[in-house]
Length: 339
Image (tube, rainbow, N blue to C red; front, side):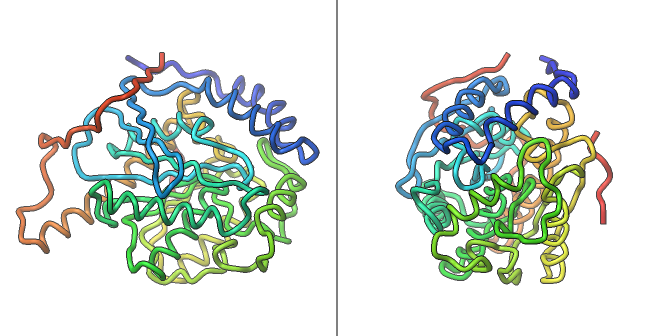
């Protein structure tokens, strides 16, 4: 069935008051969480989505597939929300569209949030979840991409750094959507964009930081070593408050030897990929993320198969069965890369 997208302008007009109210620094965090969960539950899922609840590293999680996975690909998805809000519910739609476009099993993690659980709780949870995917679900580290939006994007980098340094394993790829890699950034000049604002960001940064130094690499991966990080995709909207910070992060990553595919989208907003089920431009951006993940995970798998003396990666006709089905949920052009 051909998807029915809403006019971009109409979606933006509806999102503006919702985000301006829900992400206000004076609104209690618990209230923001409830509102975002309510609105997130109405986001459509692609037809054929299968959502299975499970536990990863001791935390609630969801395993999401759309059809059979043709090759051993997995994604650990870390939701955004300033480390204080966001949930499996708010990002289930995006995770499902990412599963469809990447042909991967997407594991979405409900990591602990601040202020109840400051740094390093979120990193601890994400690392434990990744290792659980390896040990309990049969994926090699380089068959797993880590992806996240906003705070989840920064968390993806911090998690990867910890995995390399403490566990000696490297994910196959990183896919970062509007990543927040320097929460205590003092150089932000724009007061707000469609979604986030400085006052709310400062409140969340303080809540998540706890007793950590603002430049602690695990808290602010902008200041982490980039050595050994896997290929990285970074998406950002040109109207975003975080645009200068994200450009700086990309420069830092490239200077550290990371292979970075970077794209700026004039028609998208902060974490705009979350509206992939409603807005064509967001759907196109998620498709690009899926293409990136497919390419890098399949390349890693083919290399591993060659090293093991096998004939290579399976053909598209050799499907790996999707996970057992517990609950079915069905829903009713990107710009050129910039240097």
